[in-house]
Image (tube, rainbow, N blue to C red):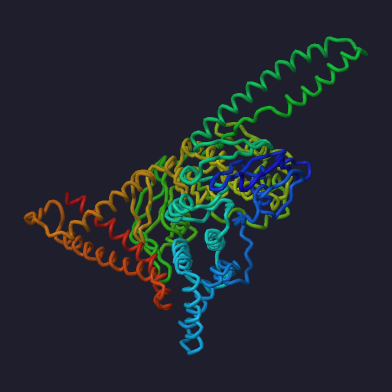
Length: 629
């Protein structure tokens, strides 16, 4: 029996039909991805399932007492709430106990009065009675993964990305049986995404999610629902299986349309050749011809447009970076960073949120001034910059076609032809009626696609893309990847989409913390394998260090490591061992039901810093050990 059943659901906005009589069901424990092109009704369908919107026809049936947790694409949390109130607003006794315990321990930490001490002790007793310590540890685990440390800060102080992470954490902490997630990986760095994959895959929940992250889809979901041309199609399998079956369906639809077209041509000859007849059969045949004509004209399979604009010529000197330093107060971003970009390079930038990836892009573009070093840009370079911010809200109140025409009435394509602004938009999924839609009425994905098209209209030869994959549908992602693979200029891209980075990046700039950036030749999967090899080596080192060595001491080889490097390696081994021990102590502190409140709060802030130090020192140790070998 289904946990959720959808029967003959239909929804229109004005004359535009989003979906027509779609039906499907979700069984308990089923994990399903919903895919569709931007602007075709994915978010609207999720809103209906969550009870925030009503269908025109059909119904949604939930099994009795089923609770839903919904993560919308846009977070509407009240700005007056604190992070704690927002995260733990459930009225269940368990969550209420954790919320009260957190409040009481924070109050006692700030002011150690007798009244606060007694309140804290009462909250501990409640936690013991409800056996809520496991829930409290789970909450701290989720919050630490998303780096949410200040639970008492007002939501108004959070950035848009931080609010999205808070909303996601709230969903994961709910006790609902059905989770509905709209683009949960947006604004998460790769480490967070990989943790979320494992968390959702192991969760005993029924899941329906919209995502453009194909690795994430494969790791989490077993079923795919596709909303295409108002109809719903179901696939049992992974993304590769989905592509295979979708291609078969497209080929069948093309063949069917071709049969109808041939039939239409035959009937058209009869219409032209026949005299005006009054017979019942002739009239019925003419009526049938009109229906056939509508079907051929309306249901013609859409040709997939490819991003294809002309890139300007680029000279020998492109972009040179010499010994650049940049830092914010108390936070180094770059230290002695140098690189010379070569023609046709496709470089990815990866690292945790807040490490300085966007800052690097802005330095190279001249939007920020370096504090030391030199950045030299070639005379022929034309940058095309796609920022995370998107188009400004000042475009609200203006129609899509007017926004594009303001930039240019004509767009030069890769083959040398010039397209009108209207034709250019229509080729990239903006139908003629959509072109006269006001900007604020577009979906999130449509706004991002419009922004990308306006960047490409400048005919750049050096593309700088900051999170271009957020809010794009999978079809648009595939088109963008194909365009970038054939783009003749240079490419520098920040993205947390691993599939995307694997496909388009030749090498990576990896932010390692403390201003260090590693130039890694390979894609993200190569880098992940490198990291896993490093971790395996560190585990072996720790295992060997616990057993007295029976081998004779190896004499130093001056050709391998210098004296300074050997001393650094010894220091790293001691540091790593100490950090591992500190990490064990923090884990034990989190697991203890009677931990001191102040120490717990300090530990929560220390944990991500500790993990970053471990990663940094482990990477350096592996570099030195490879050199020694």
